[in-house]
Length: 309
Image (cartoon, rainbow, N blue to C red; front, side, top):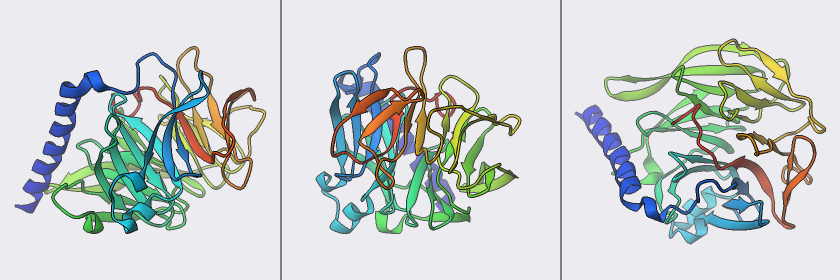
């Protein structure tokens, strides 16, 4: 009976999401055709949307403005990832403080949040609406059942060991969840057994370096950007091969994001400890700067056809 309820609740969550999409599309805050960047910004523990053409911040989300319990606000200290999903209307975010959240952009409403812990570094949404997180010092993934009828302090999850877990990407073509760890690339199947979700390790293989960091789709391609401690690569999920990308800066890249023609590939590399106040392209041209910011990851606001659409 419980498994049927979970399926029904998950269906209701998706139904509510798309009902909102149809009813409030005119209030969409991210104009189509405009170049925007979403970033995890740690100086004020927030997610921001940047207009690089104007050199301004056009939108922000901060946990301490959301009427959350004080203990939950701390979960969102030092945002570590930010992904725009579902045709640009929703945001996934994780934070080193352990928090994960699904946020509706137009009114900043939290649709779901939970505690993942272990220095959470990434988040991904799976078919049907459940969410998975990656925790780097915890060395694990957590699969959360998105059930809006329970309190966020007790969201059920299943935990899977993965050394140095820093990243997550859903591959809709292969129905696989990808995650690069300390020395290996892992691929998981997402399955439902008697209505209960779980991850099943499909395969894993070694990587040439260590400390896998960012993993994100190459825009418009059937491939993934991958960074480790020393290099930037393009990973082919069909063959498992890696092609090193030559750039002015290789070491310590925190994120990579590309787009269609007219969008330079942007990278984040730290100026101080693990953050920066600048965004550059692969050729070393500055795309954006604002003094005082602590940007950890930055991505173009574009449809992600590798994972969702």
